[in-house]
Image (tube, rainbow, N blue to C red; front, top):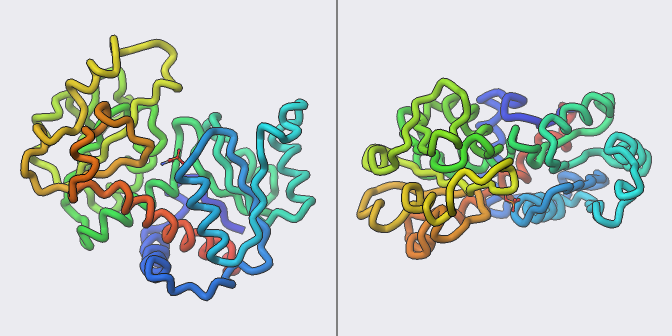
Length: 295
Ligand code: CP
């Protein structure tokens, strides 16, 4: 039984195999019974639009039975622990759990305690990891740059609090992509990757820009006097991008005119909705890889 907790759980060859399947799923080349008779539970302890809907669509297209636990109406409000919840759902028949939680590392703990009897798939835990988002981001990049070796990406925004950034920082260099982190000092993680707080300095030198949301819900204290002040330095705008040939990405949700200007949201260089569309195909391929075979 395989889990998917971080992108390190797949080798580069396995990732390329998954992407190959994802290309087929984008063209709707599934049978629709790949996960027949599988029972998958989705547990979202944090809000989600894209990831939750995308997983559910992916599971249904593969013929899986899907049970969504409504956390607000579940017995967690009566004090039941996450592990007890999982043991009970396992007894109900769960072959896999897809879980989002505010605590980093929860998915590791769950995988360990379920004793490898059900697959655990991380749909985002705290600021630690969001591996399926990084997979769909790399897949999107490789549709524009089939050999991404040497391509340059600027990851812009609240990097320290972003599980999307953390997962991409680990995954993209494995495929030869060169990362520059662009953020104010208080949003920078303490890692050894080149960085700057001057967006204008790097914007002319990159092939890909990945803008991130300022995660105010994870800030202990207000670090900018206002998001408008932050946007003056870090919002991706038409004025900054000019006619530069780049692809512009964002994992969503976008704070318009803080992360990316309204005008750029409809610009052909902006690939945000393609990322979302690719996300269904990539998640289908990941689910098939983890649950349909004997891995
Ligand atoms: N990208 C992402 O994780 O979006 P949601 O929070 O809407 O799932």
